[in-house]
Each structure stands twice: as structure tokens, then as C-alpha cells.
Image (cartoon, rainbow, N blue to C red; front, side):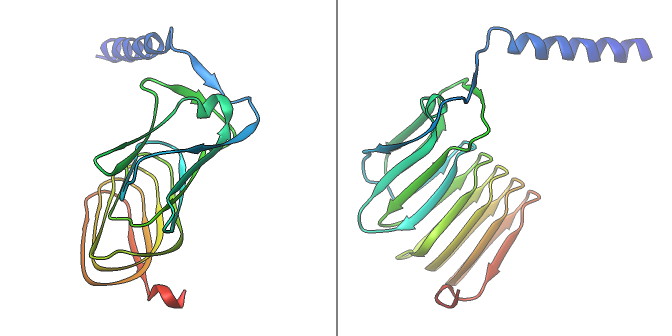
Length: 189
């Protein structure tokens, strides 16, 4: 039995090594640069990455990224059906000591999906006209101030939703290890 377990262990290790052979790992060595993106209008954001996102509500939409140039070359931003999708190129593998930060200003935020390890921080109060939907399925945390008629939040990962705000109705579902924290009224914070 012990021999069988050792064989499975070596087989798993062999497969892990094989998966990495031929795969280029980009090491972040370039200086930190800033890049502005001209994108279509969006009211929803989906982040599948380790990118840290800083949000502010503003009538003029803008998207700016800061990070090491060779890592930012792997970053893919796409707007489809009113949703900004933040991702890296398929099968991209990299190491960096400098984080990639994305600074986003948008007029309206309706939906926020965080399925990566990057954190999302609101730098202003977000007034949602009706409802604000959040889905956290990764390890990234969300810190946001808001006002909405309805807040819906689903947490299935280890990320925390640390919110300051007010809504007439709350719907919260937690099936992961993440926490939902709600504090006071946003105008008082």
C-alpha cells in the first residue's frame, strides 16, 4: 500500500513538472509605467485576475493601468455587452514584485464580479440607481461605499465584502469562507 501511495505521489509530481515544461514564465523586470485604455461604455466589471482595482464614480469614464511594462503587455481589457472584463492572456504565467493596479472611473456601477485574487477598493461613494450586484468567488476582497435601493451579494470564495452603505433591501448568500461586513451610512464615513 505504501509503495502504491509513493508511486501516485511521484506520478503527480511528474505531471506537475511536465505541465510547466515549455511554458514561458514572464518575470516582471521592466520599470513601472502607466497606460490609458479607450474602451466602450460599461456599467459592470468582472475581474478574473490578481490586478488590484480602484473604483470611483465619475461622469467621465476612464481606465488607467500601472505596472511593469512586460506584465502589462499580458493584460487584456475588453468591454462586451456593457461589462468590462479584466483578464490576462490565456495561459499567461508571470512573477512580479510590483502589483498591477487598475484605476477606473465610471458613471454607474451595477454589477461587480471578483473571481481572482485582486482586491477592489472604492475611492468614492457609489450611488446605484436601483440595485447593486456583487459576486465574490475568488480570494479578492471588496471595499466599497454605496447607496442603492437593493444590494445583492453572493460570496462563494474566501474574499470578504467590506461595505459601508445603505439600501432598502439586502440579499446576501455566503457559501464560501468569505465574510460580509456592513457598516453604517456612507455619508457618515
